[in-house]
Each structure stands twice: as C-alpha cells, then as structure tokens.
Image (cartoon, rainbow, N blue to C red; front, side, top):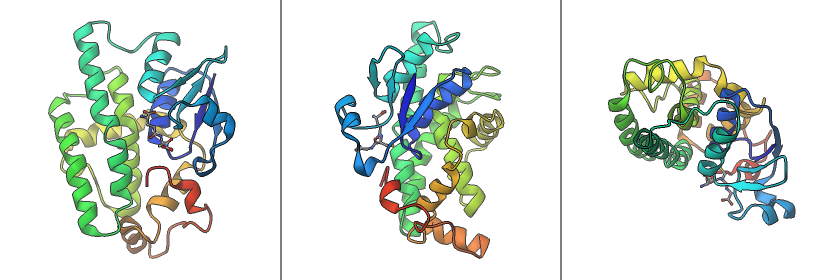
Length: 239
Ligand SMILES: N[C@@H](CCC(=O)N[C@@H](CS)C(=O)NCC(=O)O)C(=O)O
C-alpha cells in the first residue's frame, strides 16, 4: 500500500504512526502541495493528503477513514470492540485532530500575543485530555490505542518546539507531559516521519518571521535553518 504524503502534515503522521505502531510495511510518496500533480488531483476527492492507495488500487481519503480502514485490515485491531468505548475513543481522537491546524497556526504566530492566544486555544483541548488521563503510561494503561495515536502528532510537535525554544504548549498539564514522554519513548513519532522532518518543520515554524523562531534564535544564539534550504512555498502546509 502507498500513502501519499506531505512531509510536515500532521494528518499524514496520524496514519503513518498507526502503521508504525502495528509494524505494517508501507510506501510513501511525497508531493508538493503548492504544485499538486494531476494524478493526485484526479485521485484525491478533497485535494488533500493523506490518501491511501491500497494494493488493489482503491483510493481512500480523509485520515479518520484511513486509520479506521487500516486498523480493521492490518494485524490485530487496536480499536475497542465495545460500541460505547469505540464511540468515546473516536470522539477523543477527534478532539486531537481538530487541533492539528490550530497548532500549525499557533506555531506560525508572528508575535507573542498571537502565540499566547494559540496556546490558550490548544490549552482547552489539553485540559480536557488531562482530566481523562489516568496512571498511564498511555491513555488506557499499558496498551497503546487509537486515541494515543491521534494525539501523537500534537505531542511530538510540542516536544520539538520545546526543545528549540523552551516554549511549552503542555507546560500546565503534568499528566499530558508524562503521556508525551511515554509516547515519544516508543520511537513511533520519529519512525512515522521522513528523515528530514525536523529540519523542514523547524525551517517553516522556527523561521525568522515567527515568534517561536525568535525564541529559538535567542536560545541557540544562531538563526534556525530557514527557507534558504527549503522553499517556504513547499512547506506551506497549514499556513
Ligand atoms: N480532513 C483532512 C485534512 C487533511 C489536510 O488538511 N491536509 C493538508 C496538509 S496537512 C492538505 O492536504 N492541504 C492542502 C490543501 O488543502 O489544498 C484529513 O483528515 O485527511
């Protein structure tokens, strides 16, 4: 099977993280979203990544639908059997995915006030999942589930931002912090992205034009990798 991807897309990462968690092999084809190829526009009804092309050439789109399909058709399902738990897990997953784009926007904030507004928006979601988290290490104990996978892109990106800038979207949420550590310790986050993910991600979100970029510059004393390496229009996924 093949995932059609854009390197910094969180919706793609949710799909690839599930495949990594289930040890399922897959191919990835990266496209330039600023110059979508004709074959992609013909295949993708919403013109967005991810799409999944199955081994018998069926095209699936929308990351929610793709992860459900993949969980049903590969390895042992990690989706709950009980209909109530399954519906609850879907809803907690939706709380994550509906914050992917707000996180992208917050990371591109041009000034401190905009970044703080973004932190507040994301904070409402993190506060809700904080109240849902138990002893851990994962949301439902020892077994990594669909909800953990849905939150992984948010937690992974927050960790990178914190490492470069000391700015922490999760600072007010101790259980979410422990959960972030546990999920990152699985190695799935790194495996689910391209080898140059971090340099592309920092080039775009820690560019000189963003407030986080200025924080990163202060922390390191040097400019971050900027759009001289990666053309900004190639990276403009969630702007
Ligand atoms: N609802 C979609 C959202 C996917 C999405 O927003 N993908 C972005 C990249 S992160 C995209 O393809 N943007 C290009 C466009 O909208 O034209 C899903 O869950 O798959």
